[in-house]
Length: 109
Image 1 (cartoon, helix red, strand yellow):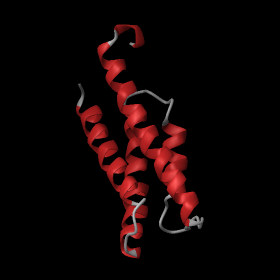
Image 2 (cartoon, rainbow, N blue to C red; image 1 turned 180 degrees about the vertical axis):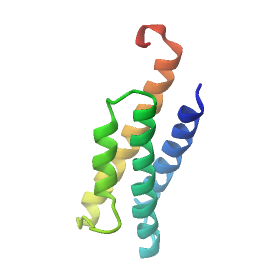
Image 3 (cartoon, rainbow, N blue to C red; image 1 turned 90 degrees about the horizontal axis):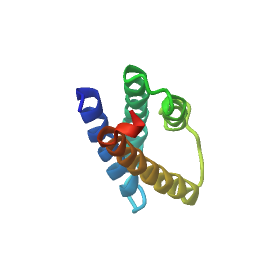
Image 4 (cartoon, helix red, strand yellow; image 1 turned 90 degrees about the vertical axis):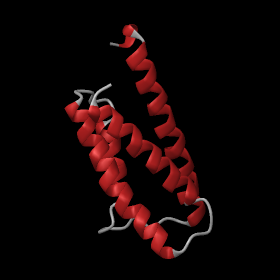
């Protein structure tokens, strides 16, 4: 397992945790933190996909970085953000499973 893949897994786990915490009532500062962290970390995930020469998720991660960007905020109602956060947590878990299968199964290589 390459260092980029190891770091990406840690980043994805961290994103899953902070996105799931958004489903609870948190202070406004927490949501600002989530915006900044998600912006930076989705940008990193896009970069790591480019480095790994796997461009399948690059565009998705870049769009997600823009969705969470702290400068030009995308304003949605709380229940919409809850749906987005839940879907993204599941998507990130799914990509970790895919990465693990891809690593262990020579068919995917």
